[in-house]
Length: 276
Image 1 (spheres, rainbow, N blue to C red):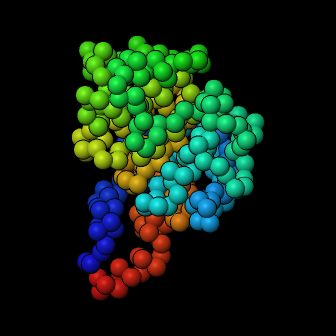
Image 2: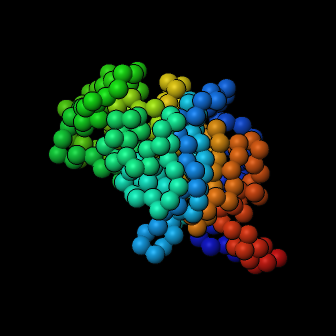
């Protein structure tokens, strides 16, 4: 079969169709119905370019919404807009029933929304523990303090006085997640946490998601890697060119539906012609 390089990479997930039939970690097997974050008709432009087009969804207490899509689909722009780092053209972002669309980024953080950004954005000249303490500044009451982060990532305790610039990409990603968690957010935004990491490191990073969700935190996860997005999702939202093309529970979606939503029906049809 002739496929683009990108499509070959993503299509490999369909070898294990159980990803769409069950949750590997039983994430939020009985999720709460309470809505933490509600996004309605959110539209975002980069200059004249329409990056996010009237997207709507909810993030619930103790559940994971995975937003999947190819590079350039608008996923990171969506997350950054929710975090207050990008300006929305129109639409509404509500948190616990309050419209926060006009809140600056720091107020969204103190309200209970923490972002683990693409690229991690750690203080490289500071120690691991110092980076965690930055996140703990004005932290809300909750289960995650620095000690709890060391329990979540046991290797950190012995290296807490080391500069983060000495760490591998996977270790730095763990520190970035820990820094976000010590603020004790109600909603955690994870932006492409697997990007550029070795497969074994990605596995370890994703293994802690169920523990985060078990604490009651709602997780909004952005992933280009479909297999990882499906792996931990309570619900899945697929974006293509800024628009929602599919939404549902992983067990209710077929690989074919996800493939069409991810690439677009025209690319799937072209590939089918090439393979015949």
